[in-house]
Length: 248
Image (cartoon, rainbow, N blue to C red; front, side):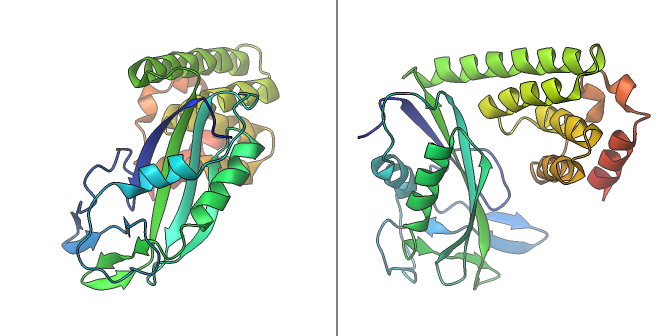
């Protein structure tokens, strides 16, 4: 049964720029190297069609997701990354931000089933493997502007509550759980990712911390002076490792 939750779609291509991809022929020049991101055609075995248009991937995702409409998995932003190979195949499907295990499983199925529907990206005129990222917002509200405002407010609420829990109550585990909730609503918010990484680092989960911080770097980095309670962080080992990573 199709979910009754409203689904808002965002496609992030190649350079992890968060924007809806309304123009499939979007091209970017990076260091004088011409890059054309992969193009979803919606039809199998048309990898080498030279001209194709239409934002088909949004319709494909929404039409093919089969999720029970009881709303038991709640609201949030599901983020999935994958690679479109030079032959137009889909590989390395990974959950970046999870709304629920049910949504994760269904999303992976839908993405994997798009094999053969992609025109591969071009790098200097040659087909090349390129990363892709899809974000879909699940909300009980069918108004996109209201939903975005609501998600932002909820993320800010959990961020501030988590910061207080971390720095005033020194409860790393509870603070991490609260930052998890902030990230659930705004998975591209670098401040929440940085601070969740700090909690993970403090609890001994250095791999988890580096995962969060590496994603921050992939999203374009962050001005650490803007982060709440930075003064309390700057002398910590976690902060020093984060600075080193972002400076590389």
